[in-house]
Length: 337
Ligand SMILES: Nc1ncnc2c1ncn2[C@@H]1O[C@H](COP(=O)(O)OP(=O)(O)OP(=O)(O)O)[C@@H](O)[C@H]1O
Image (cartoon, rainbow, N blue to C red; front, side):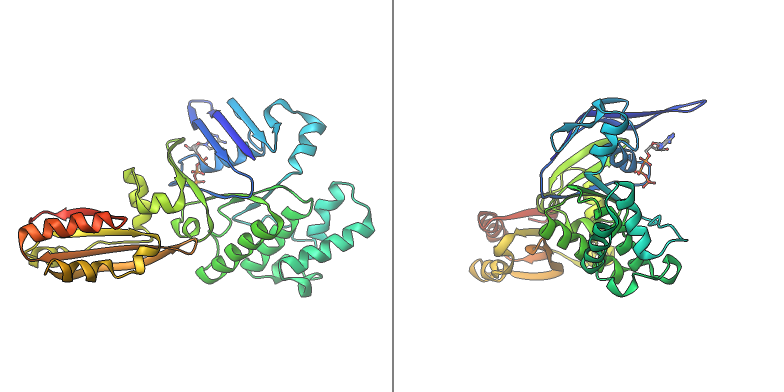
């Protein structure tokens, strides 16, 4: 659906030249929710804004739904852009217009007849759960409600892609969850491809199918969210994951352990199958659990446990080999074998 090839965005200021996006190549599939994460200044916004040509890429190619946007100008570009809706952290609603008028505005701009506009706005309001707010002004709405209006407005012209620029960063956790659920519903029911940028790994974990991690304008890691969570390659990916799944153990606890400390990661169904207790029993070991949880990523379990193992040296090694054969990954955090 979205093909980004060797895309760079260079900003030239009076005294400086900054590479906002540095040679990014990404392929985002139709119907996917794709997350782009990175710290401030990593280039997320620049890349997202290049996808609908709010920023014109300096070099590279960009195809959305089969159309090479970089080759378009003027009216042709305006029409192609109707396929791409966008929402922002700060909503950008027009304060002097009611909820209805804010949404209708996008349709008027697309020259839709008034009768159709009313019908369309009403169905959009129903979709985002705000039918009772059609005549109120943005100042009378909560942050979550404002974002719902912005989502309805972004969907007004039946886009095929929705770009979300830190759409939940100004919202509290409960409201964030409800907006993420709405985005999921839109993705599933309307088959809209969603690209979102965020610095919150929780958002990615909650709704994204695949993700990219950006640093200094470049994509440094990319793939299925589950795969990155279960086997991160870069230090930055590990850092982002630790922000939602932390396995830090106080030093005093680590020092009080005498046996090896291992981290075991189970993927999929096996996470709930009691492999650890079976293993401990089979190899006559004692396991002292230091940390553990089963995370659910797109409803797929990912179990991570940290424990100290006590028992015969040989048996410990055999136990670790056995666990690895059960579709689990073993990392020895502190050797003592
Ligand atoms: N209009 C601009 N003019 C000059 N430099 C810019 C411009 N926009 C972005 N940059 C620079 O490009 C780099 C990437 O910025 P960008 O806003 O894309 O990052 P980001 O990951 O979205 O960060 P944040 O989460 O803080 O918005 C930064 O070094 C930034 O200073």
